[in-house]
Each structure stands twice: as structure tokens, then as C-alpha cells.
Length: 368
Ligand code: ADP
Ligand code: GN1
Ligand code: MG
Image 1 (cartoon, rainbow, N blue to C red):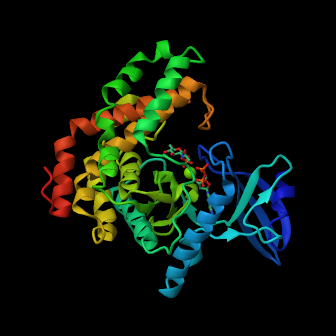
Image 2: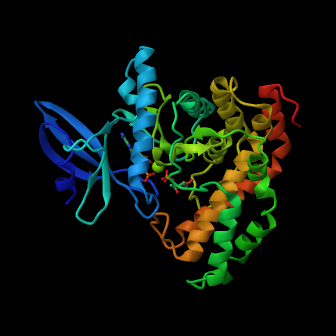
Image 3: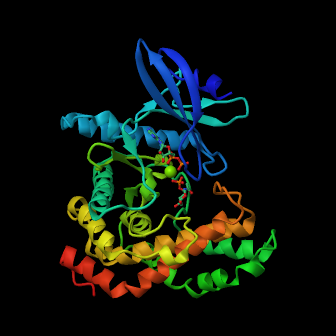
């Protein structure tokens, strides 16, 4: 089945094999191997999750515009190895950027980026600096994307109010009878509802600007170069759409400053690491300081807490609803993830003053 789909893309040479690849929570990813006149090459193929992305055509339109814009910048600037620095969409034989299978599912193909790896947790301050810089650069590169506005591929993706409404509905229905076993997590979410709305309020009051952002900048959506450990290419572009810079900074803080992977079950291993936090922001700000407003800077630390809270809430909601959104590989996977994110928030709270001091030191803005 997969081989039949893959052959519909405009790829030359002999098809060798295809296999499942990568560990994302949303799409199904495969790699294929080809012999192109004696050179072994690979491609990346994804079945787009059409329950999550109800308009895959719009997703692909966004991705084409964004990847072409970034690639053009690298080409113009004469940056070497540019086809490893941004995704390249491979069209289907009929010229479309996707193929639809007999079940109506949508597939896409990218050049396979070689000699890279991804991380589920940060290994060093230098790595955190590289990761931060890659997202600052990504935001800067897209700041001058010509109109029209990108499609909202998932409306209200980081809208805390809407996420709480969904959570309360899940709690009310309690379709799996799981609510009774997770009262501590439910209480945490209720107690933090007000605090979680700080970013949304700033958005609504027009205090922070709309910008094109990635919206899913977790650590393993950035490919790291095997050669020098620099953050080479930002991937997983389905959610690139209008948002705020803080959504991306927030998700970086959530996933890069933690001492454990997102689904680590041993809570004692989870800590907000202020050294990683400082390095991450150094890297990010080296690229982004030139366009950030005072209001955005003032909310940097808060954004990390907010995005972590949104994830804790979404994982818990999916657990209550019966695990139909995120891929899971064990029964309590979503609950473990939610507990993990709650532990990270508690650690952030215990080092809050230090976090603000770091932002103040790096930006020169008086925020403490
Ligand atoms: P998901 O939306 O399910 O998270 P991703 O787009 O993040 O899917 O891809 C899943 C994994 O596949 C990535 O973490 C990465 O390891 C690998 N991957 C995706 N695209 C490429 C590519 N073009 N080249 C090499 N590896 C890739
Ligand atoms: C999903 O696609 P992936 O695995 O990179 C999710 C993100 C969450 C993340 C948590 C479209 O990201 O919002 O932060 O899981 N993506 C979508 O790991 O919902
Ligand atoms: Mg991903």
C-alpha cells in the first residue's frame, strides 16, 4: 500500500524499500530507499493526520509558501547546503503537492535530510543555544513573507480558554470513567486556570503583535546536524500559521529546559534547568532581539509556563476522552505526559525569580 502511494510522487530511479520512521505524535512518517543510477537516496513520506488537519490542502499551501521563502533566502545569501536547512516538498507526478489514497487520506513527500538526528531532551547548554537560535532565525525569515495571510490550519491552537472548555466537557462526560483516578491533576488544572490566561489576555488586548510562527517548536521538531550539533532544520511545519512569537519561545522553554523527556514517568527526574534556559534564550535572542517588543520580552518566562500548562491540559483531556488525539504506546501514556508537564510547571514556579532575572540580564529590560 505505502509503496503504491510512494510511486505516485515524482521520484526517479529504482524503488528499493519503504519503512515506518520517526516518533511524532500526529502524522505517520515513512522513509523510502531508492537507487538513482547508482546513488542511494532516501525520501520522507507522511500520511497527514486528517482528523487533526481537516484541510490538508491548506496545510500544504502554507508549507509550500514557507519552505520556498526560506530556501530562496538561503540561495540568495549563498548559504551552502541549503537543501538540508529547510524542507523541500517533492510533488506528485500530476504536479500536486500531495497524493490522495483510496481511503481519501492525504500523503506528502519531502527530500530526506541526511546526517541529522533529533533529541528528546537537551544534552548541553550549547545545544540549547543552537535550538534557540534556529527558532529565532525561523521567525525572522518569515517576518517578510508576502501576503496573503497564511491559513489557520488549526484555529485557536494555543487558545487556553478554548482548551479549558474542551477539558471541562471531557470531565463532564468522563467517557472512560477515568476522572476519579486523576483528581490531583484535575485540581491542579482548575487552580491554574486564571494564571494560564495571562498570554491570551495580552493577545486580546493587543499588547503583543501577531506574527507568523511555527506553533510546535518542541525539541524533536528541530533536526540537529551530526557534524557539529548545530540546529540545522526546523521541521513539522503543519502548524506554521499566524500566532505570537511567544508560542514558539514558550514551546522551546517547555521542551528544551527540562531535564527529562516529555513522557518520563519518574517525576523526581524532572526539573526546570535554568542553565539551559539561559543558553536557550541567548541563542533565541541573538536572532530575535531585533524585532521583539518590550511586551513580548516581558512575557518570555510566562510563555514557557503557559505552553507547558496547555500541554498538561491537552494530554489530560486526551486521557479523559480515551486517547484519540495523540499517538500513545502504553495505556497511561497521556496521563504520564500530563503529570510530567505538571511537575515541570511546579519546578518553573520554584525558580521563577531566577527565570525573570535571566530574562532581565539578557535583554536589559526591567521586568523583575
Ligand atoms: P509529526 O507531526 O508526527 O510529529 P514530524 O514531521 O515531526 O511528524 O516527523 C517525525 C519524525 O520524522 C521527525 O522527528 C524526524 O525524525 C523525521 N523526519 C521528518 N521529516 C524529515 C526529513 N525531511 N528528513 C529526515 N527526517 C525527517
Ligand atoms: C504534537 O506533531 P508533534 O508530535 O511534533 C502536537 C503539539 C504538542 C506535541 C507534544 C498538531 O506535536 O501541539 O505540543 O505533540 N501537535 C499537534 O509533544 O497537535
Ligand atoms: Mg513532530
